[in-house]
Length: 113
Image (cartoon, rainbow, N blue to C red; front, side, top):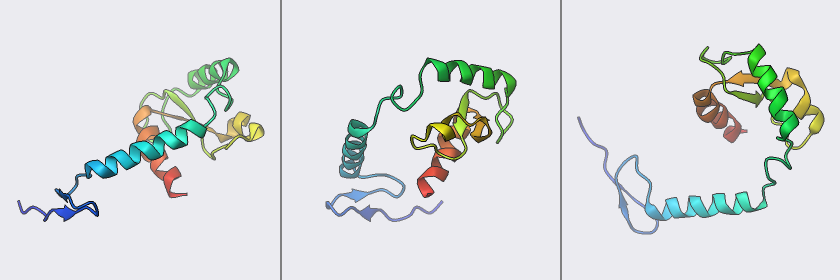
């Protein structure tokens, strides 16, 4: 099977196709740390005891992932609420997802917008 040629990172390292340069990985970690430093805690974003109770009740009523049919473990907001408490608590904006669908598909969709 033919292999693609390695690429050169702007820092000068030669990187195998499909890999990330250590300098880029470090930049990603630093960027994420800066973002997390300014992000409110989960409790401050509304994910408190009341949310946990509502989440459990919703998952009991909707046990399967809407995307693949596997058992759901996450209540996802269809439209990101971004701090809007009315949108946060609107059940018509909730959907049950399994962990792989939430981690892969949903996150990819949100990055695009």
